[in-house]
Each structure stands twice: as C-alpha cells, then as structure tokens.
Image (cartoon, one colour):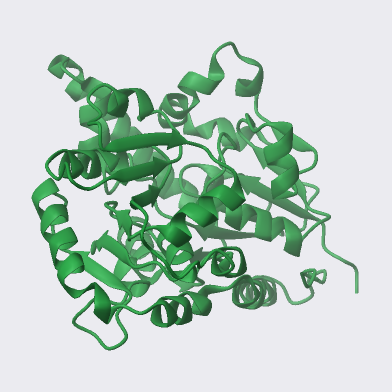
Length: 389
C-alpha cells in the first residue's frame, strides 16, 4: 500500500514549552512530514533540539516586529492559517491551542487535530485576557469583546473541518464538546519522565520552584503575591514570556525570575526543590508531572485537568496538595498544609504516578487514533507508519 504524505501544522513556534514537546514527539513519529506554522522565532539550537527541520511559515514571519504582535493578529485575523496550501497531502495532523485546527482541506484528505484546548483567550479565559488587553483603557472593552466573539464564530466553523479530534485530557474533551459540539478521544501528552527521574537527588531541601511560560493564564502573579506574604520562604520561577516585564515591576526579594535555563540545570533545580508550585487552570500540565518524575511533590490549583495528574493528600499514595481557589491566600494555606504533612508524600509515589505518562504510551495511543481516523474516513487509505522511537 502507498505511504501517506503528511503535513504537521503547529500554531506558532516562539518559545519551547509543553506544546512544543508534544510537537517534537509528533516529528519523531512522522519524520518525513512537512511542517507548517504561522511564525517561527526559535533559535537554531532550540529548533535542532526539537528535531525541526525546514518550516513553512505565513506572511507574518516577514513583517516588522511580528514577534511582539503576532498573538494579537491571531485573534483578529485567524483565517491567515487558511492560506497554507496543503492539497497535496493525504493526512494533515494539527496540534492546536489556537488556530492550527482551521487549516483548509479537500474532501478526500484526513485531518486529525490534537487539541490542547479551545483558544483560552476567546473561550475559557476571555475575561482575564480582556483585562490584560484593555488595561486602564476601559473604553476598549466593547471592541475587545467583539473581537473575541468574531474569533469564537470563526473557531466554531473551523472546527467542522476536523475529521477526528484528540484531546489532551478528559477536561479538554469536555470543553471540545461544549465549544464545538464534537466528540474527542483522550490521549495524554508525552512526559520526558526519564530526564527528570535522573535528577531525583532525594534531598528536596532547596527553594520552592515553578517552571512555566510567563503568560497570563499561568497566573504566576498569584505565586509572586503569595510569596511576598511569606518572606521567610523562597521561590524560583524558571521560564520566560510576555508577562516577565509585568512581574518584574514589583518582584519581592525572596522571588527570583530565572528565565530560561538549560535542561540539566532545570531538572536538577526541580529535583532538589522543596515542592513545585502551580497556579494555572491547566489543560493538562506537563511541568507538574516532570516534577513528580523527579520525586518532587506538587502544590497546585485543582481546576482543569490537574486532578487527572496529581494525587491529593486525601487519597492513597498522595503526590501533592491541591487548593480550590486561584488566590494568594489559598496558595499560602496550601503551602502550610504541605509543610505540615509533607512526610506523607513519598518520592516513590511521585515517580510511580509520573511513569503513567511516558512517550511510548503517547505514540501507541495517538498512532491508533490516526489509524482509526483513516479507516473511518476512507475505504482505502494510504498507510501511515509512525516511527518507533
């Protein structure tokens, strides 16, 4: 049987993160696939590490200052992704948290979308992103609201072009049903368990740590404010993003913005941390699982999919502490509870829980979803043969 030609479509490449880790795994599964993305601002080293070769980008790539405004343009002009010409491919795989799912296809093509979430800025976190967009200019609010509404209309219509949705968690599967009226299989993202397991020093005497993109929905601001009120404890924030300048303006002395650090240094820091902090309403949450792979307990907001990946203190074999409100006070209370009951959380329990989410499981389950989509869409489809990594 003929081998299928494949296009991989990613929203944008601007900084390494959880989505890029999944995308790298897709590239390992389908190494002959061609890559399409709106913009690519990764360094050569970052691109090499992810295994990304030649990339086809949109016209935005060549526009002045695009690195600073492309996210806003994706809200106002989401149909830019429709301009990619993919008619020669048998199979399109998009991994999407924004617009990649909106790629156009012919009737006899198959489109499988690995959906991290319906776009947060327009659906589940419109109020938070709206406040960031308007700031003190409240007169802008009606224009922002209309822009979000237009995006939702486009996004809902674009979702109909997807033949088969695969959700990153049960939580996202429900959101796909709510927002798009579509069913989705659930395949948890791959976690590099081995890299962090090697970093388990067994000490966990270091500071509290979080690793995150500095974007609004991650709510790093809540962690900063909580530790401002806990001056005897220290927090290191690893990662970068558009919120860095906002966070740095009023950073207390016991909180450090470390920016990007190397893989080994990051794994070592997490492996020695007292606990890993997390404040986002998360679609899945790779970073907290990486922490558990290092034997490090997690203190996290229990919204979203985090209850699918963290075992709270009220269950057997706990791996962390969950709190139920996104407030500095709730974080402070959770840190206190953790410190009182930390002995109940063992390194072995953390590592065992993380081991359920390895890359081998992702390859097998996602590959099966692609096979199912091809079988359901066509009577005779070109074969798709993922590479066993």
